[in-house]
Image (tube, rainbow, N blue to C red):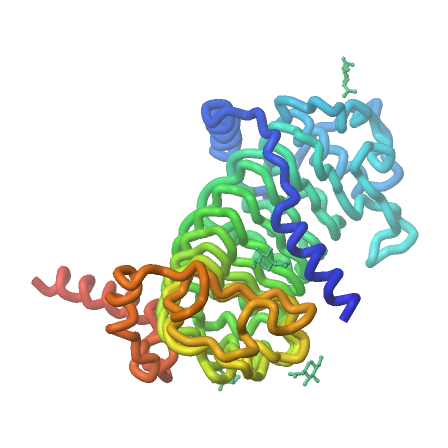
Amino acid sequence: MRASGCILFISLLILSWFSFSLALSDAEASLIAHRQLLSLQEKDNLPNQYEFEVDVQVKFANPRLKHAYVGLQAWKKAMYSDPLNFTSNWEGHDVCSYKGVFCSPALDDPKLNVVSGVDLNHGDIAGYLPVELGLLTDAALFHINSNRFCGIIPKSFEKLKLIHEFDVSNNRFVGQFPNVVLSMPNLKYLDIRYNNFEGDLPPQLFDKALDALFLNDNRFASYIPDNLGKSPASVIVFANNNFKGCIPRSIGNMTNTLNEIVFLSNELSGCLPPEIGLLGNATVIDTQANLFAGILPTTLTGLEKVEHLDVAYNKFTGLVSDSICRLPSLVNFTFGQNYFTGEEKGCQPGSRKGVALDDTSNCLRGRPKQKSQKECVPVVSKPVDCSKDKCSRPSRESPNQLSTLHLQYLFFHHHHL
Ligand SMILES: *[C@@H]1O[C@H](CO)[C@@H](O)[C@H](O)[C@H]1NC(C)=O
Ligand SMILES: *[C@@H]1O[C@H](CO)[C@@H](O)[C@H](O)[C@H]1NC(C)=O
Ligand SMILES: *[C@@H]1O[C@H](CO)[C@@H](O)[C@H](O)[C@H]1NC(C)=O
Ligand SMILES: *[C@@H]1O[C@H](CO)[C@@H](O)[C@H](O)[C@H]1NC(C)=O
């Protein structure tokens, strides 16, 4: 209990710890991105036999360190501001002594010392990622969180086959989801939160053997792919994007692995799928601030480990039952800012010692701080029937498939007219 409470605390902290000291204007960011674009036009990926010139004066302990040197020097050139002097000692052949660069024996040849990781976290560096970073083929760890890197993640990163942890969070990256991470076979930890990524998520993301996936605070605006439940990740955070549509019913297949899932602040809608109740090992389930409607599925009683359950700021209706409020591990259940018309005794704030319950701003008769009748009537009088709702009914076609079908239909018509 205590340990997982701590995990909860840490993860909530993680959601809010970034300070926004980024002093890069949008114009500067787009200038840097433009420079990256120019360099990518010259070479958008690294050829397999990348030719490079290295000062003959510089001697390396082995060829892989020479590759790393070329990659790191190209990166240094692509940095326009390094206010904390992270890279001032990035000179000369001894790349293992560069600040933020880590070496260890190569996995496939322990006699060779190679660059196994880069960690420039909190460097506040402005710049872009050059194609030459694809030369860091021994890196297992790439951490550049809280910098001012702009532009895109170059395709050459697909050469980093050993990457285990990829953290580019809290930078100024733009464009579609960086598909290049899908070609990192050993990736376990993917953190791209606090950037300006937009568009869709590739379904293949959920086929990967990730442990943790942080997508929050970007501009993603797609459906959550139907194969969500294939992901073995223990933590998935979708918060603060514009995801829409249903929570895929496959979520029920994450029973044994999912610990924490956060949908906070998106445009997700429909009823909660009853399969959510199968998440018997989850400690955090957060659906706050979406457009969810209907009643809470009775299956939520299966959430035996849940400590933090948040359904606030939605359009839920119906009764909040004791069987949810008395879940054995519950620490905080927030269901305010909805249209609930009833709550059982054990759900009233203060009724359970050590459990924070919040029922404010609903349509609960006799409770303080509720919505007015005028606000309640239009919603409560037309409750959503979850047995007919597209999100909680066995799906025939997902919205994704539907839109593909629709496109095919359009395509067909245009070509036959
Ligand atoms: C970084 O180096 C410059 C020039 O050597 C120096 O003026 C500045 O104070 C240094 N900044 C920090 C944070 O050490
Ligand atoms: C879980 O996976 C199985 C097969 O892998 C599939 O048949 C089933 O429909 C999935 N369950 C959900 C809730 O999607
Ligand atoms: C929790 O996960 C373990 C495996 O890690 C599994 O054996 C168990 O069935 C899960 N518990 C529930 C309630 O689903
Ligand atoms: C319960 O969780 C909500 C957010 O989900 C938070 O705002 C509130 O402060 C928490 N209450 C307690 C007592 O921790």
